[in-house]
Amino acid sequence: MLLYDGFDINENGHLTVGGYDTLALAEEFGTPLYVMNEDKIRENCRSFLESFGRYNGGMGKVTYASKALNCKAMCRIAAEEGLCLDVVSGGELYTALQAGFPSERIYFHGNNKTPDEIRYALESEIGCFIVDNLEELKLLQSDAAELGKTAVISLRVKPGVDAHTHDFIRTGQIDSKFGFALETGEALDAAKKAALYPNVLLKGLHCHIGSQIFETDPFVLAAERMATLMAEVHQETGITIEELNLGGGFGIKYIETDRPLPPEYYMELIADAIGHVCTHYNLPLPHLVVEPGRAIVGNAGITLYTIGNIKEIPGIRTYVSVDGGMGDNPRYALYKSDYTAVVANKASQPADETVTIAGKCCESGDLIQENTKIQQAEPGDILAVFSTGAYNYSMASNYNRIPRPALVMVKEGKPYLAVRRESYEDLVRNDL
Ligand SMILES: *Cc1c(COP(=O)(O)O)cnc(C)c1O
Image 1 (spheres, rainbow, N blue to C red):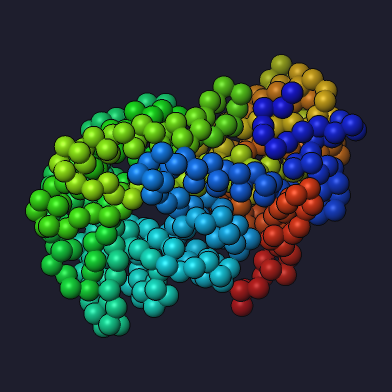
Image 2 (cartoon, rainbow, N blue to C red):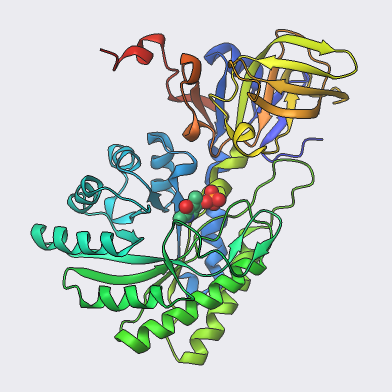
């Protein structure tokens, strides 16, 4: 009956994750609780890796965009699955290195990397800097020269394709804080500058066109434009671009009407588009890189809450309040994101009550979902919210001094603690 892969209902009518009873998880680890199905994460990693099967003898890289969920356990899983890793801050880099993630497989993103972050990444010998602007390029050259190193780089390009969730725009996204514009010649100029810097090695071109995308057209158009830029860079500088990185943004299922496509579907069309351009310009095929974040972890995660107060406002709506909220999941407050929820201990009953799920923060906008259908709820029930694996833990805050929840992984039918629940002591640890 359930819409979500890796979740089921057992003989007690309880929701299960990777075969493990969510009621037992709530009992054992407390609520609110992030639960990740590790088997599902690994399956997602493999489906991306396998999607390169038909591209240039499988010459592709999957770089997990760790901002979706960055903790040591997740970095270890990505490392074991053979993925590369995107980081966008010194903190994400530190976590990855602490987890033992191989530094040469780390890509460093960001529109405003600080001098300290650049130095830290250079000293850590990461694999690639995705250079956003000329200041960064200059700083990389001078720092790398000082350290006697070569910084391997890709250029972040705005390809003139901006994919939003349900539409995409072909022009006008020069107004973005990320990267060099393609249309104005800025990207090509940056490549020419990079070619002149002795301690910088231009290996790749990169773009990222949006998030939670279900269409293939924007990816194909971006692939064509980026491959054409690759040819121009070759013509103007003599540099053969080895790596073409098309970013992330692959959509996942949050609600019943979401229809995500399997990765190979995108990959086949993208590979075709790049192939055509390369043949036309007589260039070797580059290695293809994609950077899924949400599509690796999103649908592998749920959040468990305990239902508390239920407030029925006659003729208006019913608020079902949970013991978490915008602190552990700010996405509805930020973007009105869709979610599906189920009363985990009544999962086999019909979802025929329309309610608004509210958090416990001192904020009217602290909602998880409005006017959504769940089973008849009572205080003490456990509520599960699906598809919270991406951008929940990683966006969590301590608003109202609420400690952040624990994160549990379920692997081969057994749970283990991956991130401990914060204590009140943790909250005052840096207070003087
Ligand atoms: C956020 C981001 C991603 C991942 O996006 P998803 O929508 O989670 O797949 C990949 N690359 C870059 C540069 C990003 O900023």
